[in-house]
Length: 146
Image 1 (spheres, helix red, strand yellow):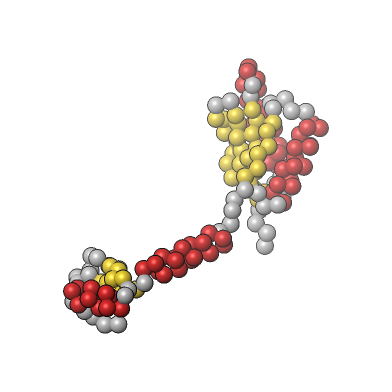
Image 2: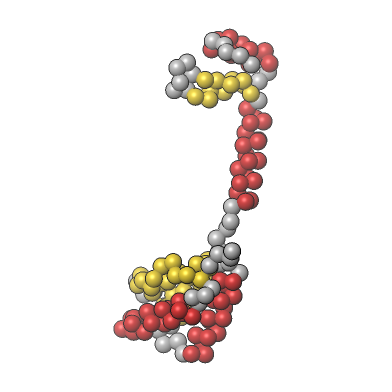
């Protein structure tokens, strides 16, 4: 539109029935723009919504083991893990230690490492097994398809 002193800019914006919006207050002189502010906010909200729709949503699926999980249960849960990873979800596998079963933490770690090895072709380990309280947790992320 043009370059105006502040009073003239305010008068011009009122004359046009629009808003005077300060774009860069730290510049010398401050930079302002005459726009319809509600329309600006609406377009900004629309842009943000479009960006949010394009963003990928990360789904985390959990699988729980006990320290003494037998082979049949392990295989059953491994099939679920394979399905989750092939669907593109992250996997949080953990061994839950009840009561005094915490003495079997080596068995729990072996179980999680075995799972990581079995799922090597579908996903990569994001976080190695780590003991947090009564849980030993490991994260596996799906491999990206090229």
